[in-house]
Image 1 (cartoon, rainbow, N blue to C red):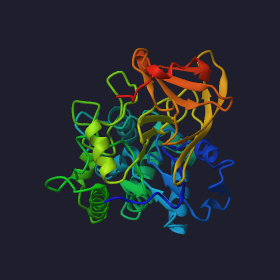
Image 2 (image 1 turned 180 degrees about the horizontal axis):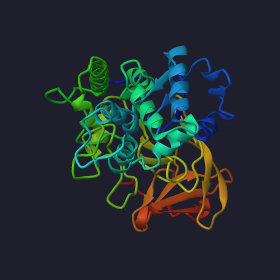
Image 3 (image 1 turned 30 degrees about the vertical axis):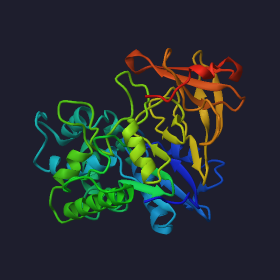
Image 4 (image 1 turned 45 degrees about the vertical axis):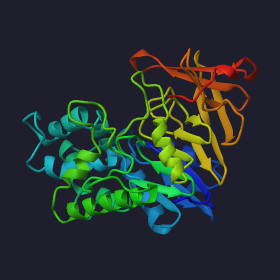
Length: 395
């Protein structure tokens, strides 16, 4: 089913991960969103999409969750909260901290158990101490109790997850936490076969999440949801999940979905897909194939971690933020892209693997590629230095 272009402007931020400064930086001078002592508010005619992962890597996880949930309750039609793996996996703690620890967990005090869970199964080595900092000078048991309280049937994380979705569509734009792949497009746990189009797929995904949270509140373990948000055992990936899929190659360079996936998205009227979850440097990365664009907007684990700003309207994607170039120069990022533009943005030089990722406020293009050891290369290139004939869709 084809859909018209979005009629509402969209402000997007993702993977705040407990860092208040990241949320505040996103809202600063944002024409669509304000954040002050009254909370987070969205301008008339606009939508805020939070792409998931509210907690774990900063000392303001509870504050971020409370702020986002309050915004959703105050403006339910203008705030969309997507559930990330760091949010969903906290449901495990209701069981694992009350007598059923995961396999391989050490014996000993509850604090040691929770630290082990974070470090070995949630990719959140410092989450325990971040929570202690948020609570104040409290004991290990008080930190553990706070996480148990979070996932009680009426706890703040449980209520937050009840307000989230796994996918959201606005016009020709699709928002997911992790990504869309050949393995997950149209597929929903518990359903036989693939959904006939993107709208049916998103509806089924969101119903699956809602039913899973309802099961959890009723005291039943949501095993299918827990498995869906995690890597396949023995691997680091789960390409069958919209929560945990990663749109990168083996080197860690961002890549577009397979050509047949893009064709299927186009058939449902999708021209833009926006995701988080996968780090791609300091600012969002654009990837293009003709009139289709994928935007990776998780800027965690970059050289700096600002609250970059991403906005969409009926025909344009805009990005703003800051980045650190090779050599240490701090540069402002500001770009605007319409899919009909004859622009090098979102294309890659196959020979060098350098993606034309974004544009700096001064006019240079930001090129990007992954290096060994989770490092990245980020270089500023004058427009006149780009060999446009060598650029191609990044696959």
